[in-house]
Length: 446
Image 1 (cartoon, rainbow, N blue to C red):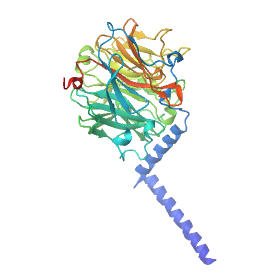
Image 2: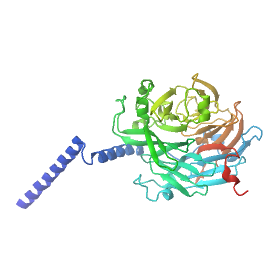
Image 3: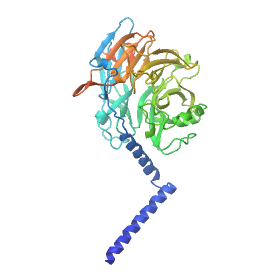
Image 4: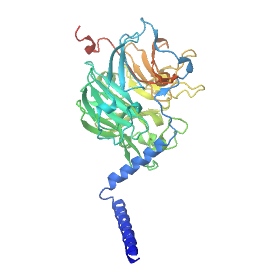
């Protein structure tokens, strides 16, 4: 009996010592506090996201449903379309395909995440390959390809960047929480979006409730080494625009948009990073070569970051909602996919060309009754040299080229459907058109 009492007291004393040790670590933020606390914060966000009603799927029901059953090239006006090759990535696999104007595959790339990293150093328990996709792509003239991995049902959802050659051999990998988009400067530096979970209160915005994602524009060397990460929150805090946008950095501001993830720590949701090159900067007096155009979906904000001063030098909002793929045109304007801007019934999306100098829309396309389009998430645009725009409508599984007069001069639908449910198609990511002269690797051996 005495031994039992002694053992019980010893056990209680041990528990008390553990409690004191834990209290000391937490109170003084000593020893393993940072690692344990950040890990716990990540688990809290992961729990919220995984238990949210996101219903994420890479196979979609086309909106509108009159596109169901269409596949391949359905429109091709040889006189008005910009001739070349089209790069796209379907949501059904970690692969990209290069099409000719008739929709025939002339080249392809593939690299499953599990092959790129058999034991990833940055992700403890990666999801299976069927829940990982390629989002951002960048194709080089020699056939090398950069691809950004994104995953679902995991936090963070950014899984890294890989560079592969034309034969899908790995050149380098960046094991970081890169997500959504990628851009390359004239000197070969690579610009990506990354994030991490933080418990810190955002400077100038104490109303934000940690834990949350601290979002960054990260710069990689041409061989994939991290050179610099710039906090988007800090860049706004250092900017004259901060007081104008801080009121929108709340957890309830975008409750009207079904895609809002703010309550799960995803406050601003950057989805676009675009390097502003010499040609664009020459036509646009507001921006300079080397600055970075970004898009913040949750608050309808476009902004330009100067990576030298680490400051937001320009920002705008108001014409668009939940936008994606803000890109510079050859005239110095910005073209973007306005996912929810029209706010109509039935819902539809539109493409906008925006003049940042005079703060006005100079051109838009909302589809027609016969050829409408809508994508609540993802989607992309590319301004072409002939002034047409290539549009990637994710939820239609559709790529189309539209003129300034609103004519569809080229159109393509993916043929990938969900096994057992042919009504559901693979969404389409990352559409890009290249002239035949740009892609030198296709002419090798001729």
